[in-house]
Amino acid sequence: MLRGPGIAIADRPPAMPSKTFCHVMAHDAPPSEQDSSGRPTASDDRRPDGVCGHLPHQCPRDPAAARTASPRQGGVTMRTTAVQSVAEKVVRHLRDGRRAALDALFMAGDEIHKLRTTTGRDRRPVAQLAAQLKMDESGLQKWGRLAELVRGQERDTLCSLTDRTGFPLTPSLLVELERVRDAAERMRLAGVALEKGLSIAELRTLIRNHRRRASPKASAS
Image 1 (cartoon, rainbow, N blue to C red):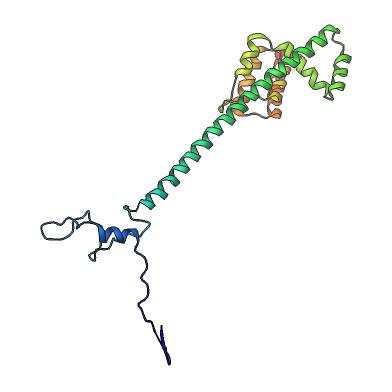
Image 2 (image 1 turned 90 degrees about the vertical axis):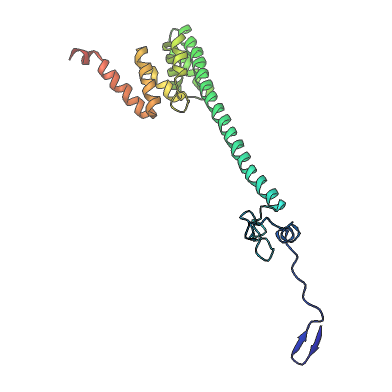
């Protein structure tokens, strides 16, 4: 660079920016097709000076743009599919776990019922069992009564009932049905609980209303 008072003159022109892929394609590509008037056809995307009119990241001829766009879009689709697959598996495991919990409750209730019947329905063995398991005695008594009431095909049918999402009753809701002596009414109340998504308190209210209607005084009136 030549320097002087108040001036700075470069001894060579400044370097031009490197040509983008679009510029190379525009200058190196064969002449575009022309119509009868000599104007470029609509398929030609170069400016009159022969340079491509696209920005580098927009040029459809740029293989680098194609390589970076497709994998990104495909990755999003693959991730969405993978998440959906895992979600379905998780829900299936939870449903199976809920059903297994109901089966386990009945099997435990069968054992408690045997203990109650072999000891002449003496409450002391169940109390001792509760103390050993560090569980509530009244809850164990409910399990035993439920296993005594619900047997055979009714048990399988009751455990197979599901709500709109495919989930069966919770163990807590199932235990509440031991208050209902009539098998048909138990099935009906279980269906209502699943259909309406009742809480334990709401199911207890329905059962209480049913027992009030089914009491001898209500029948006499």
